[in-house]
Length: 198
Image 1 (cartoon, rainbow, N blue to C red):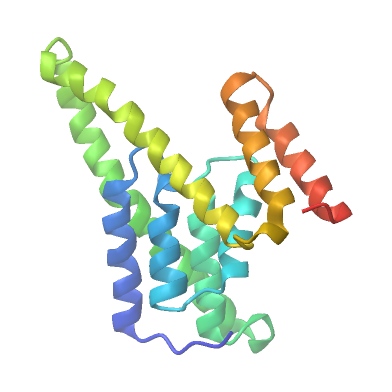
Image 2: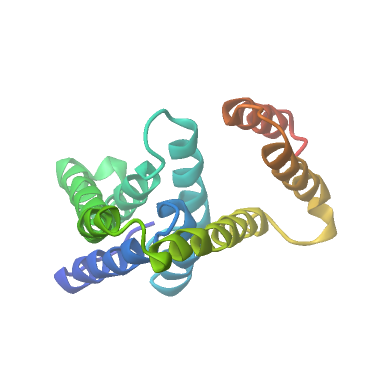
């Protein structure tokens, strides 16, 4: 994929991620549906494959789960620079994509979290603060379910993809009802994909 991004496009990327940062209740992963709508469908800066690979690689790697945002920025920068074979300017463009996307996703939420947590800690006995904390739990669960839905339907939503849907449901139940470590589930998914079951 070859893109021509202007300074205005880079600013749009920054502001889009800044807005998503403030909506990332429960982590950046909860904003994946809107990222997919913006980056893949609306601007077409990423392909579905690049989008899904960014999430899958970052979730399998050790470290914070926000790394998928850096990978998305990397792919956008590479696409804007002409791909891996385009030379050092492509690599600089990819690094710019990482910097812009990570700055956008981290700066607003970090600032808001710092200020709000100091205030909430000072006022932790207020009824409104306790109610707010309890009310966010279902919101986070719903956003995570929407993320799973987007990632599952990206591969196909017809009956020919029933093994993928079955695997998604089984994994959701296992995460919900057992203490099985997520890396085992990711490994099992990788094996199922490598063998060709899904």
